[in-house]
Amino acid sequence: MSPPSQARVTADPDELPPFPLDPERLVEVLARHAVDYILVGGSALIVHGIGSRETYDLDIVPSAVDDNLERLGGALRELGAKVVTHWSADDDELHVDESTFEPAVFRDNPFLHLVTPAGRLDVILRPGGADGGLTNLRPVRCVPGWGRLTWRSAACPT
Amino acid sequence: MRARLGKVDLAISGVPDLIRMKQASGRAKDREDLRAMEAQRRDTVTS
Image (cartoon, rainbow over all chains, first blue to last red; front, side, top):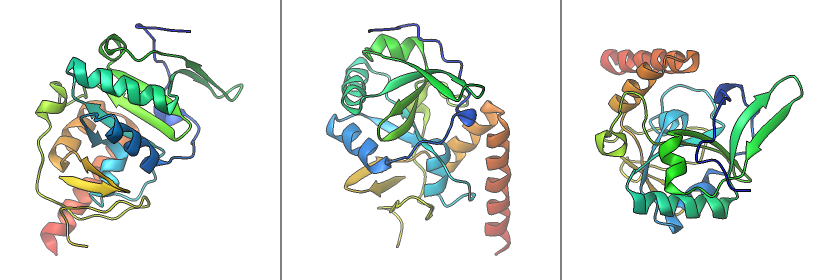
C-alpha cells in the first residue's frame, strides 16, 4: 500500500513503547545511500555528554533538496521503515502506515515518526528553532562526551 | 561537530542549535534536557 503523501502523525514519540535500537545499522544504511543529514535530539545530547537519560530513537534533520530526499527514501525502504500514525496505550497497539517515502511525503509531513527493524527513527525536515532545516544548523567546536551508546567522537580526544 | 558511530562519520548538531530546538519544542522532556544543559554549563563555568 502506498500512502500518504498526507500521512497524519498523531503519536507523541515520548509515549511510544521503547524499541530495541541499533543505531549502527541505521547510520550505516543512511551512509550507504549517501544521505546528507545532521543528528539532533537525545542522541546528539548523549554525544555531547549532556544529561543522563536514555534515548530510544535517532532524530535526524535531512537536507531538504530533492536528490537527498530521494536518497533518504531509498535508505528508509531498505530499512523497512513504516510511518507511525498512532499509538494506543489502551490496546498496546502501534498503528503504522506503509510509505514509498517519495520526497513529497517528507515535505507534507515535516516531522515523521518511523519504526524500522533497527529501531525508531524520527525524520524532521523543519525543526523548531531552526526553521530553515539543515542549512541553519551550524557546526560548533567539539564537546567531548560519552553516553550509553558506543559513540566515539572523531573530533574529540579520547 | 563530527562523531563516529561504527564505521560511519556523523554530523552532530551543536549545543546552541540543540538548545534552540528544545526551547521551540516546549515538551516536558525537552525542558528537562534544557535544565541538564544549563546545569552542565554552570558546572563547566565553576570548575
